[in-house]
Image (tube, rainbow, N blue to C red; front, side, top):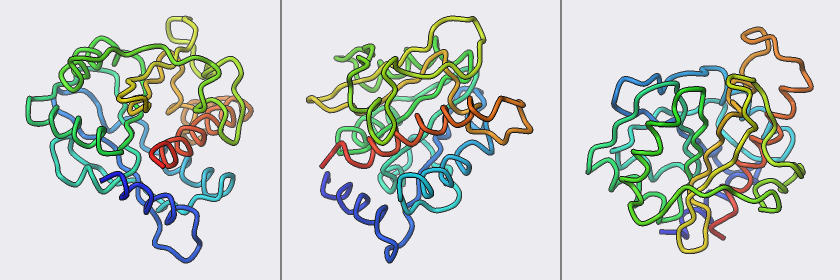
Amino acid sequence: MRNLWVLFVVASVSSFAQPVKIGKLKYDGGGDWYANKTALPNLIEFCNQQINTNLAVSEDVVEVGSPDLFLYPYIYMTGHGNVVFNNAQAENLRSYLTSGGFLHIDDNYGLDPFVRIEMKKVFPELELVEIPFDHPIYHQKFDFDDGLPKIHQHDGKPPKGYGIIYEGRLVCFYSYESDLGNGWEDQSIYNDPQEVRIEALKMGANIISYAFTSSL
């Protein structure tokens, strides 16, 4: 199965290949999985320009329990509220991640208490651990020597990057108290300074780059 992700990487950097699609995770529980509607299209445009990916111009919506999950090398999950995975959904997500897939969870303020419980269903034997600043995810094309950038203040806590590491590979990256997705949104939505938006997009590009190459 991991050979599938090699094909995604080849496709992503070849101008002659079919563009690679990335997915946005739809989950149960009533939380707003659909938040940040302009975020991924803007990140895709930035990645295609800055790190020479060949990504399709818009993301697909994919349900957590769907076999279509395996069509995407990178899945983005966000929201403010409740998340629920049933047993079949948790098993499907685990199979996806242990087969070479990558999940980026981006707390949009309020997701934290719910996602921690649900990811424990996916990997009951593992914990979300803080990712050290020297990890490759912070040093792809762009260097973030102090970890995640702070995009929105919310509670004023420092941004933290957590992850789930399965058999030595980071399969899930969780950006907390940073709000990268808001930084990827159209500037007119939050009126963030352009330099802040660029920092968010650079970190997003690092995550995409890492997701596409970590299984090679």
